[in-house]
Each structure stands twice: as structure tokens, then as C-alpha cells.
Image 1 (cartoon, rainbow over the protein chains, first blue to last red):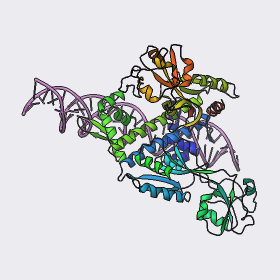
Image 2: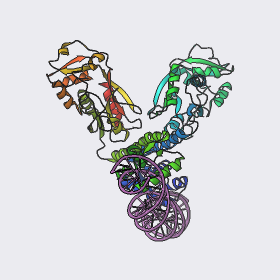
Image 3: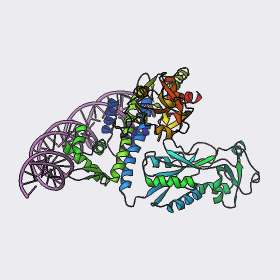
Image 4: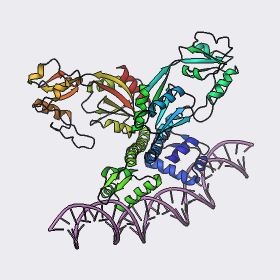
Length: 274
Length: 274
DNA sequence: AGCGGCGATACCGCACGGATATCGATCGTG
DNA sequence: CACGATCGATATCCGTGCGGTATCGCCGCT
């Protein structure tokens, strides 16, 4: 299955074999065996290109999930035996920092609290960390992060605001609409990296983190729609205007549905009581 | 991992080897290798008994999930390539039958509807079927069935009633409390089989399905608390009394969070519109 | 037509998984 | 207390299967 995922992602047997640190012929054979075992054609090979069949794309999705589950089993087992048996919390770098520090403080005061390792990660990465066992709990933000297949508990819902450079003519408006924000041609919305690392097409500047973003805004080159709690971190060269019709952001605490860990349960309980 | 699950479930290398259709020594070795690879002791072996360590029980849970995931990957891939590409719906035998028939009728009338194979199964079995890919959608009832790790959509919530033999002195009561029902020593609540097939200890009779149950009730040997929609299936030798303080039962439609199948999405959409 | 890229085929060697035989430890039992 | 039974671990052997190298066949580009 690892082999198939590699080939399906590369759509090229040679590169896939390289990535798997093996030669190409055994890889071809392995895929053929998999197809025979399943009785299903997974790839359409013309001598020039490799393409996924319908069944192949189903297997790609399912195989990723299965491989994550296997990895998670190994990691969680190792961590269950590790000393001390801490808990790993994943959160988007720069988001929900006050909530996080309150949570950590409150949890540390609980009886039976164990060490909490905080893992800061890029956007959309937390889900994967939970799935493959590198993290035990995560703070996610709907609707940005997908929570399918995870157990979650809502913690906090907030409106969004648009961040503008301090001197901007609209900075004193009581509120703005999404439509107004997207038509600010002098201040385009930035483009964030997608999963693979590439950027979507569009007019806005490319940003990688909040520091870059706010710098660009201060320079008058972009604006951004962010949860209002981020206002606390803005320097005085930024202004914010509420955007009532932007989707509300709900911060949730999420964990693997198979978790039976006391520490995770305690963290969740603590979080919901904040 | 299959090996480990077998040993962990049997807690006996000989029997586990038998179940795996292999000899005992290679099994012992395989488990040792697994322990070395993970760097973790999974089993405490005294010469007389085998016991799971803490880490071992974590691995047991995770390994089951992982094995289900790879089985699901295989099955879903095969089914994606099968002709015609129908969809499998799992439901508890005897429950939600009107809802089910309404759903099937409404879905069949949708444009692009595919064949729906209905799979009737025992209590608590649906979750497993969804996880290992034998089913694509299921009708579950909270709080009886666990929905952790599945995506669900609520369909219908109903109160529960107690079913008594028709002539019973309490049969005309306007309502009863849980406490009253559990103290009916002449009509004990029945015992349902657990996952493994064994029955919990207790006074009530052992039942396997609703037919048995209602027969026992008609004979005046038991009573039962069931969702009120089951009243439609009762013969006139049964009476029902509402139990307002019994937990409400919510019928939900559930599916694997990884599903991208159009048919599943259509079924869910149809169900929520009923 | 020729060359280059790419997947498939052919064949070889070795390492790993499984089998059998046996050991050693720990209870139960007369 | 000694003997036997039980059960997991160890030792050793063997066959299969996986991965490696060499090569082929097919197609597209120039």
C-alpha cells in the first residue's frame, strides 16, 4: 500500500521507486500483484503517462487512511510506554494563544495532570498529526480545519474582523461586508500555501505565516480577514473593522475517537470548563 | 499486527497460533520481533499466563483500528470497481423499519440513484461494518450505538416506552418512571448479548432478537424499554406505557468520514429531508 | 528513422517467515 | 517432594517471496 500511494502520488514509477529507495522493476511487479489480488485495475498506463482509475483514486484515499492508522498504532504504543507518559497537543502557530495558555494553566492545576508538549504546526496540519498518532489532542478552527473523523468539543466562537493598515481611509468604519473587503483592489487578500506547498493562483501576495501577513498589511500591500481574538497581537500600525457576514470561527478541541487516555479526557474536560 | 491482536485476544500463544493457522514458535518469534521493533514490552508472560501491559492494550485498540482500515481500503476499492456500483446500507434488524422504507423510496426517486443493498445486522455491529468497509452507510441509534469516529446526521428523536404483556396491572398507567420499571421484579429486563457473544450476569432472560423478546413479554416473563416507533410492530397481546425519563433515542444516519461517494452523499441528503 | 524515456519482463540471490524438535520454567497432584 | 503436564522460548532447517540487475518493447518527439 505504501508503494501504491507513492506511485499514485508521483504518477511515475521511476520517481516513486526513488522515493521508496528501491528499484523500479520490483515496484512495477508489486503494483501488478496488488491489482491481481484486488481483481481491480488501479492505474491506466500508457507508455507515456500513468493515470489513476476511479478505483485507484478510492484506494489512494483509503490507503492513506490505513497507513496513517498503522503509523498511529506504532506511535501511540511507543508513547504509551514512554516515560514520562506526557500528552502532545497540536495547534496552529499563532492562533488561539490566550485560549491555549489558559488551558495549559488550568490543566496543570488539575490533579493527575501529566506533561503537555505543545506542537506548533502549519495550517491544516493538525488533522494529520492526530490521525497518524504524532499528536494526542489538537486545537482546530472551524471552518478552516476539517474535523471529519475526529471527536471534537466546541470551545469558543468568535466573529471575524478585517485587518487594515492603520492609516487606511476605511479604518474607522464601524463594520464592513465580505463583498466590500473582496473588492478592495488596493489591498488584495493574501494567498496561503495549500497542502502540497504550492500556492493558488490569484492577485494577492503569497504569505507563509502571520508575521509575514501583518508586515504586508502594515506596508499597505494586503488586508486579511482573521478571528477577532487576533486583535490582541496587533501592533498599533494596524486597524481592525468587524465583518459581520464573514463566517464565524469556532475553536474546537479535537482528539482521536479511539483515544482512551485519561490525560486527553482531562484536557478536554478542562477545556470545556474554561 | 494480526498476530498480535490474536494473541492479545486469546491471551494464549497456542490458541492464537491455532486461530492463525500456524505453529506456535513462529508466532512467539513474531511477537518478540514486534516488541523489539517498537522497543516496548507488550505482554507480560509468566510461564503460566499471558497478560497485556499498558502499552499492549493501547496497541490492541490501535491495531484493531488499523487492520479495519486496511480491510476497508481493500473492500472499498473492490466495490468501487464492481459493476454495478451499488451502495450498502447497514441497519439493526427490526429497528427503524418505517424510516428505512421511506428513505429507500425517496432515494430511489432521486436522479442518479444507484442500487441500495440493505444489510441487516445485530446490535452494535453496524459501526464495525462501516469501519471495515463492508457497508457504506448505516442507520444507528444513539445512545445505544457509538458514533465515535463516524460522520453522522440526526434524523429523528423519539421517546421510549416500556412494553408489557397486555393484561398486566400497570398496562393502563399514563406513564412510568425508569425506577418503577427496573423494580418490576415479576417482569425483569432481558439481557442482550455483548460483542463477544456472551451474556452479562443478571436476573433477566437472555434474548437474541426482537421476536424472542416480544414472545417473552407476551408470555409475561419480561418487559422491555424500546423506542416508541416499535409500537407499530406490536401485536395486540402487548401494551405500552411511556417512560418520560428514559433517555431519548436519536436515529442517525452515519458514514465513514473518508467517503467521497456521490451515492452516500445523496442518501444522506435524502434522509435529512424526510 | 533514430533516440530517449518509461514501464514490463526475465532471471538471480538472499533474507525472512514458517515448520519441527526440544528445552526450561512453573504449577498442580498423588 | 517428585513427577507429569502445560506453555512459552530456543535452535535449526527449509522454501518462498521480495528486491536487485540486465534487458526488452513500446511510444513519442525531432
